[in-house]
Image 1 (spheres, one colour):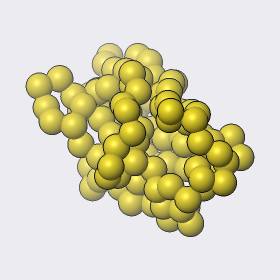
Image 2 (cartoon, rainbow, N blue to C red):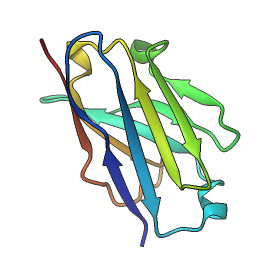
Image 3 (spheres, rainbow, N blue to C red):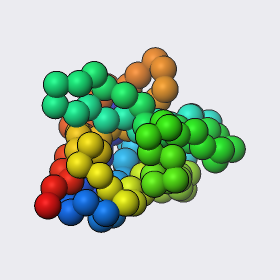
Length: 117
């Protein structure tokens, strides 16, 4: 069974940075490399939104509001996806998750990012 474990969140001041990780288990490295991965966030009182996507060739797509500030990457050998968050803003406060763009695996617990002075 595929499991997704997100980590790296925390409390940071506006303008700060964090690096989130999503460790994937329950699949081979080879299969991991064939999957497009996405990062999502859910802010209090809002719908979940996709903030970034990394394709199998490592091309990336970003939500307009995070372009130039967030960077996603992948390490197929470690079966891990990363999301680097820079120049964080209070509106980035949310619970962050990873998953496929469609046909979701069971969701992980997420990692909380709080941006506040």
